[in-house]
Amino acid sequence: MSFIEELRWRGLIHDLISGTEEYLNEHKVSGYLGVDPTGNSMHIGNMVPVMMMVHLQRHGHYPVLLVGGATARVGDPSGKDAERPLMSAEQVDANAAAIRDQLARFMDFETPENPARMVNNYDWFQGIGFLDFLRDVGKHITISYMMGKESVKKRIASDSGLSYTEFAYQLLQGYDFLHLYENEGVKLQVGGSDQWGNITTGTELIRRKLGHEEKAFAVVCPLLTGATGAKLGKTAGGKNVWLDPERTTPYEFYQYWLGLSDEDVIKCAKIFSLKDRETLETMIATHHEDPARRQLHSQLAEELTERLHGTEGLENAKLMTDFFFGRIKSKEALQKLNAKQWTEVAKASDLKTLTKADIAEGIGVLNLLTQIGATSSNGEARRAIEKDKSVKVNMEAITDSNATIQTSDLFFDRYLFLQKGKKNKFIIEISE
Image 1: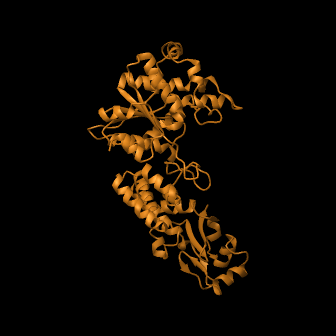
Image 2: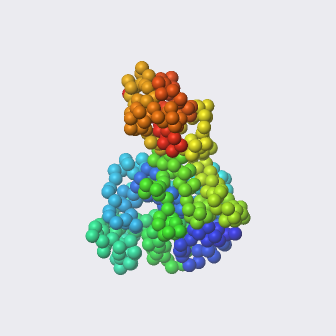
Image 3: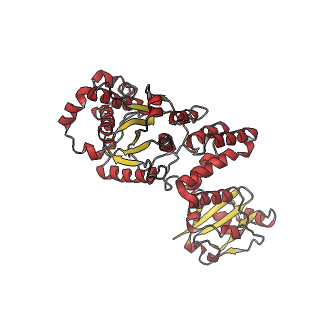
């Protein structure tokens, strides 16, 4: 199966320039993907074109990852309703470094055959004067050509309009392709479908400046959407699922894949899994036989969490899943959580706080239940303990309503787990 056939089977082709498939079948080429560091992390939606680059490398081609240290200083109007606030050079550089680290988790930079390479377009743009750029680039692309781009037409018709800065963005991205074509032998650009206009400006600039016989190619993937047509890659609360563990924890990342619909998990398995076609088709067939088992969900969640966050991140995510879904049933099991895991559990829980002063002399379990809002009164708390027998502290049943909780009951001198009934679970954090 060729590179383009692989992308087609996985649902990773939205459009491509005529002749791309035939050329790539006959030649090993360098292809590039541009990522503008407008934030310090990519999210799941950004990962779709990255997967195209992963397959480009796996099929023996030469991947080039461009971090847009220059273009991020301008802002791309594609898919935006308003102009992005300009960032400082220092922030762009910091974001670029963070994104380089994330890209390195997916691409092989060490293989001797066709290692991935990373470039930054600020390296060539910083030496180009404005007049030189207008003379050498601007004269080759007409205003009517630029006005025909969908991203430009949409923004001009909007209330916010379009600044010259953003209007010129497609020339900057087009020049990236021209520069890499002339200096690095790059023949192919990949990206998301929202970049089609910018990408084809690059191929047009190469054709007009260097000659009609020059061959530059492009392939773009569809945006990540689900069976309903809505964008995937957001939590139930509408937040992006980020690759940065400080913004989306390994547990949250793991849970996202477990929560996909039966249709969407098949689509995402094809896009994001690195398993071969035969293996994936077997997994999908098994999924169709018994969707309720959600086996495909678990397989995808494990593969992607381990790839991004490593074995430790996956183990943490699975352990926290066991915790929140009631599969941890003893104090001994709780003691296996390390300090970092308790912190992540606290972030994802109905967290309650007490001060050290509240617990220094011990706190009665009746007062504790009422103070954190688990019960509305000490009387209700007493009934829960003595009649309903529904209260546990650190997974151990409380049968005496006169019991007190001491600092020695805390995990890492900071955390306490309290449960009332099957569903009401609280993490209590002791602060200063």
